[in-house]
Every structure is written in structure tokens, then in C-alpha cells.
Length: 332
Image 1 (cartoon, rainbow, N blue to C red):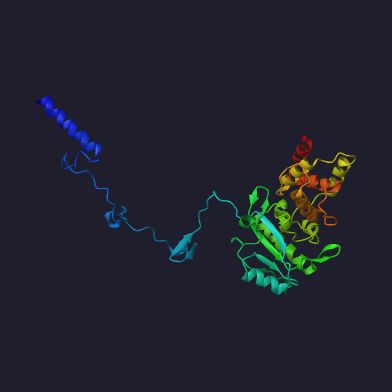
Image 2 (cartoon, rainbow, N blue to C red):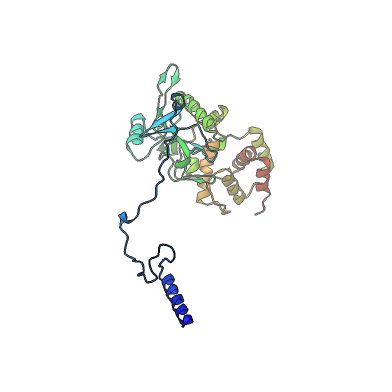
């Protein structure tokens, strides 16, 4: 009889456990009904909140002097985390393909945007040129569009853009005729770009034109943009003349790098290009942008000795001689 009663109790306990009914202190009976699965109302539960036993520290006037006001609260910037990085990695230069008013209208009323605008003839104040700043540098503006450089894509996210008022080009029987830039524009561009590069520690190879990051789609700032002059002022990249001559001599006599090695070299420098081993459309577009930047006297998009020498002189200078040599040593 005792065994029968014990067995019955065990059966009841197992039934209660399988139903999800709690057992133990606070349980009124083994025979409670299974829990209800009806949808709980929002007022059935409230999150626990710890009651403050005492108020936080009241800062003194001296301590409060370091705070920055925000809407409804104050910010203390006396601490700094190491777990952060800089949004800005690139400086991208453009021409507007319009006059002052057209450029202002497009950049202030349209969908595109930019951080800085250099007008056709910049104004001056106290003997210094004046630039229009259209957006805070920490804000992203829509100036680069579909773009890539190195392992970065959509450079709107990681760049500062400078638009320069310039008509771009006109068409003629002999092809496109590009417009030059004025001395006053170049002076302002150098002052502005040098300041940005210094403040954000932008590497020379990350100072690029729109054509560099969107080859085939864009050609700005065009072949008359003074890249070498900017380099002399400490802005951007440029190959050393003696290194170019050294690679010219090395590649002469039928020792030119193959098309695939050329493509891998362009990709190593930063251009978005697939190493297909063929002189295809993408390669011609990238070569045109590269030549427009580093050899503006001839930007036909054809692969030649001088183009190869300039490319490997740049890789030698900014990626190291070992990197340049490793590309040339590859057998395809």
C-alpha cells in the first residue's frame, strides 16, 4: 500500500514538472492548472529599476567648465578611448564642369554635395584666399559616387571632396579640349589641400582625382590639373625622375612587364582593376586615368614603356622596392 501511494506521488510530481508548473516553496498545490499561453498585455510586466540611494556627484564650477552643453544634458570629454579610427582617409579633387553660379546651384540645391568649393576667381581677405565650405568635414557628402581605391569602396564614406570651378572640356574635331586652372585657384587649392592632408595625416597615394577612383566614368580634374606642382608643395604622390629613367632602361629592348603584371601593378597602387591578362576595356580606362594623372602629355590609354616605368617608379617609392620587384618577378 505504501509503495502504491509513493508511486502515485511520483507520478503526480512528474506530471506537474512536464506541464511547466513550478514546484517548491510558494507552490500552492501539485494540482495547479497548467500556465496560460495567452498573449501578455504590456502592463503585465515592468522592468526592474534600481532606486538610487544617493544622488551622483555635484560638480563644482571649476569641474563644470570642462563640460560641453547638449540638448538636455552635458558632455564630459576628459576621457578618451583608443578603440576608434579616423573617418577621413582620402582627399578627392574634382572639377565642376560649369561656371560659379552653375556650380553653386548644383552643389547646394541638387542631390550631389561636397565639402569645399573653389570658385573661378577666389575672393581674398587680409591677403589670404577664401574658399566656400559647404559641409562640415566630419559629414559625408555625395561627391565621389560609385568609386574605389585600394581596398576601399564608396569613397563618400571616407573622404573629403574639393570641387574646383572649371568648365571641364569642350569637344572638337581632334577630340576633347580641356580647360586649364588659374593661378589664384592653384594657390588656394595648395593651401587648402596641404592643411587637410596635415590635419588628417592623409598618405600621398590617397590624394586622388575623381578619374582615379572612377576610371571610365569620370575624367576630372582633367590633364591640366597641376599634380606635380601639388607634390612639390607637399601634397600627393609623384614619381622620382631618376627612378623612372632606371625602369625605362630596364624595360627597354623587349623586357616590358606583361599585361597581367601591369594590371597587378595598377591594382597594387590603388586602381580598381581585375588582372585578366588582356588589354580590355577596363585596362584602357584605368590607363587613361593613370596617364592623365602622371603623364598628362599623352593619355591615350595605350600601354607603353614610359607608362610602365612611371607605374613601377611609383610602386618603388610608395610601396617599397621589394614590392615592386616582387611584382616583376612573377611569372605569368
